Image (cartoon, rainbow, N blue to C red; front, side, top):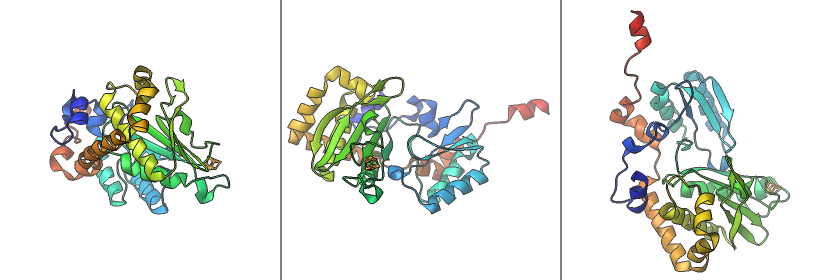
Length: 289
Ligand code: SF4
């Protein structure tokens, strides 16, 4: 219920954190030993020496036992103690890093290849489009996690054709793919449409995200929802009907005006929410006394 109310009334309804599973309440993935993982966002898979230094400093300061590169082109700090979460987030925030929402039903990553910046085969600026898409789409809740990728040519090094939404750049523009899966099930994407400009690609993908948000059952990935409604219905709504596409993109923007904010910053700065990460008591020590 919390998801549907958020999706339909972003301005009127307020999130109920108590209705959420532990990862979304804590803004971190709980691990088998009770510690958490911390994954900062790396827009389009791009980082800088300063960001890497901040991540390394945080790993040293909070005794992070494992630092791992993820499949989504970012860095996972594994084994962080629950009580350290607000402080490590605050340190990472100071370096300009925000939550990667690696725990949420919302935008996870936009994987990219190097495209025309570096690759001899690149047809478009796939990295730049990936960064724009990630900055445009992060924040709002979706029925399930949402993974994107942008490949700079049909060689498809970013594996865009197994993502929820993928873009394959070609000489004449951008092929927009939807409904891939590469987890419990394996499924190649289907082509939604082809557009000529980055702006059109961003508008179509915003509309696609919003129509999924408004219509899918909670916990259905895009490929599962498409199997129910059919790709042709979605094409009618957002490829053939330009007015409807724009209206959907506009409703997505309204939702983003509320939800595109960093939960790490909110929780690290707020004394009330910060308190929920402090341990209640160390019962092992108390039992020994
Ligand atoms: S997908 Fe194409 S443009 Fe991108 S890195 Fe691979 S070969 Fe280069």
